[in-house]
Length: 156
Image 1 (cartoon, one colour):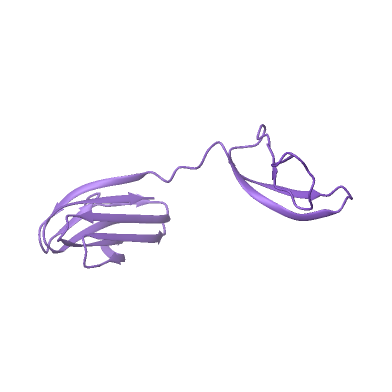
Image 2: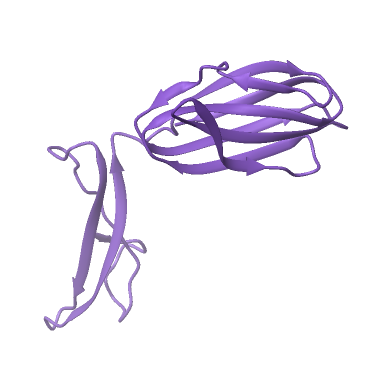
């Protein structure tokens, strides 16, 4: 460690340190630092997080494009849905300004689709975040008012 002003000559000093990450696995690590003065008295412990190997990118999403007529439905990725092992499901819907499209997440129960989450605002954008269990799911886009194309980004 070195004093940022070049000299350790006051009761309080700002310091700079270079820490080798050689041998550390990729990911987030904690570095603890505790200073000691020339009399041998230790100060408080400070900590900082460092990430080795860069930052973790956000989960990749799948984007579906579709169209829906007024008072109609559109299903993504299709009426049969998709299998999911469980975890957080996110859907972000975007449509043309002036439309009111709603977004629903449905889960297959036997032979019946059950709505498990909904976003029914009065705008052209909707979002759902859902803690899903394993099963078969599908997204339902409903054109409450207006018709046209939309984009739905799904993140698992």
